[in-house]
Image (cartoon, rainbow, N blue to C red):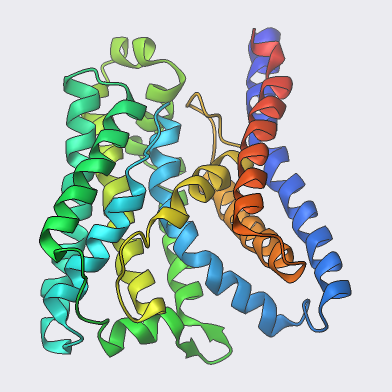
Length: 322
């Protein structure tokens, strides 16, 4: 019993320590930013950085869910782009077509996620191979639909959600916090959330306990696709229009946010609270790097190194498991 308790504590340690560590690093970045730019630590700037983190944080909801199962979703890029282009293509900036456009954008993302889940669960295709293939399929379908030239713009209501303020707080931050509360509650206080952790920790044990692993995987990837679609719609409000490749910027940072938040890339361990902090940290890091004129190429290198370092640290924390 003592060994079991000790093992559980070793599993939980990175999930707790990682968000605390990243929070400390975020504070350090704010100190550096305040030296480089006046007013960097002002409340209004902090809220603005939270607003800039929101789209990444929402995309990372889906990535968190699939990583908890031991998988990964590399189709986020063109799921986001496809949802955005279809959304603007249907609405053309017209409020009267808003809900049809929203349904279409979310539906496209969810259907792509469903296809990912079916391929992974029923055909036993590797998550990397399946989602990478789906990313290419979505790219092709989007190019055919748009003929290489996306049209239309975001309706005013979506622009207001993405860029407007409710009193002193950006609306998108309130949306993100609301989603974070719902997702965290679902992961930690529902049977479905427990199933996700169980499948990620040990698929064989979860199957023996009566969990339908295939259903859990299909549901997880469908949620990921839905979140990518939602990200595409909201990001369209921020940019006021859709454009090819707009989702490329979310893939690596979304994975990095999840891993930085203390999730195990092997599944079974993690929390969305950690992902939330990880997404905010990456936005602050990107902003500080932009202030010192670090190119996008070097930023991507840093993201890759951060992911590798986080995985190595997780292994060190959980060495007792072996």
